[in-house]
Length: 295
Ligand SMILES: [Zn+2]
Image (cartoon, rainbow, N blue to C red; front, side, top):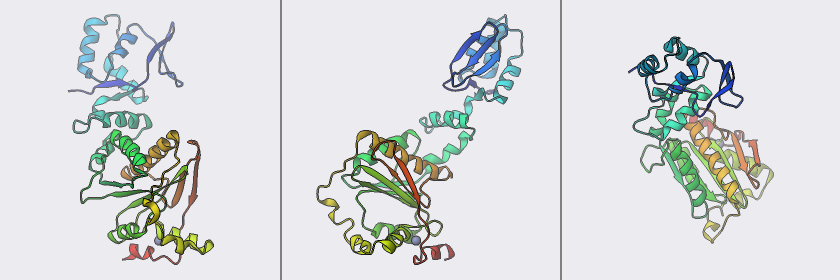
C-alpha cells in the first residue's frame, strides 16, 4: 500500500473565488485552482491510498490533467496534507485524535506509542475522587490508563488538604517520580512534580515553608489526620475540569519527555477557572534529596 494522504485533519475545503481554493479558515491556506483540482482534493480523505486516488482521478475526474502524486507531494511538503498511516494505532484507537493533533503541531505521532506503556499510578481520597475521575477520563482519551501494577513511571497523589508526608518519603526512597495534588477550598494546587534527586522535593518545599512559618512542622504532624472528618471541597464544575485537564497535561508532558510545568514549581488552578498561578520551588540546603542523585 502506498501512502494514504489526508488534507489537514479537521480543516474544511472551500472554493474561495473563481481562481482559488482554500483549506481551513483559521486563517486558512489558499491554493490556486485548476480544472478538476477540487474533486481531486476531496479524495484525500486519509482512507484511500495514493494509487487508488490516482486511479479514481484518471477514471472519474477527466478534466484534471495534472500529476496526482506531484500535487500530494507538494501539499505534504507545505504541511497541507499528511500520510494518515502515521495515525494508525490498531492497539489503541483512541490515540488517533492525539496523533492528528501531533501532526499539526509538527511532532512525530510515533512518539505516542509510549503512552500505552506508561505506568501511571493515581490515588485519591474520598473528597478528591471526583477530580481524579475527571483526570482519568482525559488521560484515557489521550492513551494513558492508570495501573495498579509494579511498574510506576509517575505517582499522582491527590488529596483534600495537605496529606501525610509518609507516601512522599516512600516515593523518594524508591526513586519513584511523583506529583502532589492538593484540593484546598475552591482551588487546586499541583506540584511540585518530583524526580527524586533531580528536582526539588516536597521536603524542600516544607523546609522553605518552615523558614518563614515556624508553626509549619507542628502543622505537618496533623496532615492526613483530620482529612477523614467529612471534609468537602468548594470546587465549582469549571474549575474542577480545568484542574483535571492541567493535571492530565502534566502527566502527558512527563510521559512524552516534554517539560511539565510543575517541575520545580507549584501551580494553582482556581478559584475562577481562568486563574492559573505558578511559583518556583527550589532545592533547600537543609534537604538531603540531592544526595540521592549522587548515590
Ligand atoms: Zn528535597
